[in-house]
Image (cartoon, rainbow, N blue to C red; front, side, top):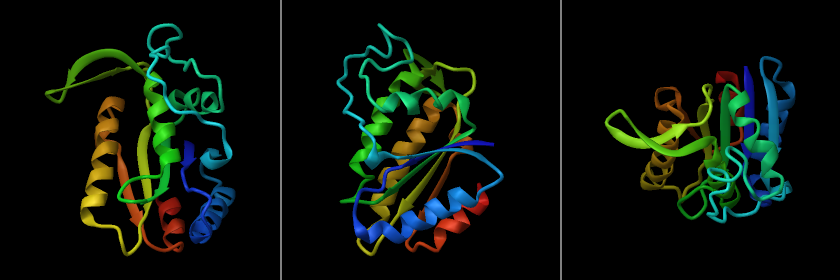
Length: 182
């Protein structure tokens, strides 16, 4: 299996144990071919809404930065694993920025899918989606529902809603369990 991991953990020492466990799990994993990106170390700019990825350079963003490495891998992997702590009720801003910039993986055109209007996928093969959320005592069920719903909506565009996995952990020991289930 080919796995794309988008680590959206910000530079905050309270997440160090989680990050250490993630990187240990990645390095020990022999069952997957893994492309691992720690987003905070990358130069990824905000989407400008220019729609170059739909019109001028279909499937490629007009912004030239590190996100090009990520977008080019999406149609070539079996699964994308998004990782983020819950921050103020939502995913990290660096992961959201990365996710927003992936709109080029879809056509601007709309079709009906499961009775709803969704973008047409650009590539025949699209990856499954998995999400690993790091929670704490301030995380509420509403937070989890909001975040999981946005990823479920993205999975509908990928036509992978039945293959999506959504996992929450509140301690670093849970990381190994998540990677064992991939």
